[in-house]
Picture 1: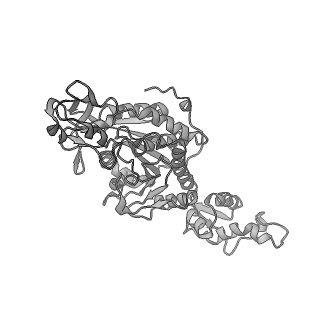
Picture 2: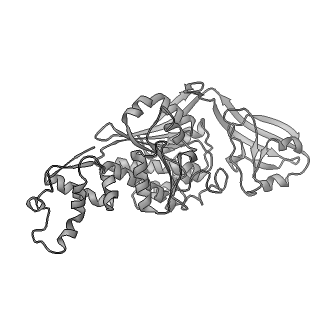
Picture 3: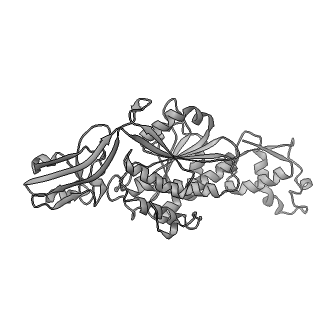
Length: 440
């Protein structure tokens, strides 16, 4: 699935990352995705063109994953409703939301009264096509705007859905960006929704841009693992196959969803609520937008449910712009590429990038002397003492007073009210002067 968009030539820079992400979303928007099938493979193939080390995995239908079973593979070729004159009044080729996800096939004539039992619309949003799925129960149906539905006249209609349910595979993608250590930062996003921009494509395109950025870094302390999975069943598959490794290696992680609009910044914690992931995201969001929204674990609804389930207990928090279910366009055709913008995507990318930058630099500083170190002896204190001297070194002295190996740099930054990144070069000076050690 080649792209001719000029923003996709080469890797993104920080100045054009929003345009890069929006261009990918534009290319992928028409693809009919579900939890399995050709749309997922097409999407993963496209992302692999951006990040060649992406590996595509396949899990056979019928595989047991904890209390679940991998469903059959679903594909759709065509679907429509025709009136008595042969006019297509609902057409899958115009919008892939018109067909219920995992709908079974049908080719039949029926009157309007019978047809109504298989139609779905939103009276409160008469211009929106709803997104409806039936993954684990066999049924057929169409979705349409309420205006369309109310315009239907009594009479006979042909309903045609050309879909296939068969034993096949469920695919997901995985990118590993190695670091100095085997400890990992885990990033998860999902690729199972059809044409919706914020609820679906914002996560995968931001995660892809993050992978490109990670590849561009000369030095990485942590290893980064990014997965592109169908929501719920994908995270169950991944954790059931990799749980021992994940529990041993993951130090922090983020679920990326609904991360491309310009309305809010939102954070949903891990079930524990106090992991390194939680601390980092809250710190970054607070410094980007003091009005960011914090939700509780009781507001969960995406793959954080699986990563933080009892017995799994991974440190995974969710990073979002406007949270799923909290914006009117959610799960409708109104969630389009006008709602998701380059600026919105760039903002979502920045939260993830800055969270990673803090993780990479977050050490525990330990001062090596008993009592305050003689800073001037080590070239760390002005040789001429004036009224302004204390203020010039105050941040250094406040950092030193908390450097007992118990607090990490993020905690110290919050205690002394100094931006995290301003403390990093101070630590580097103290380490170079051999008055401070660091540990992780």
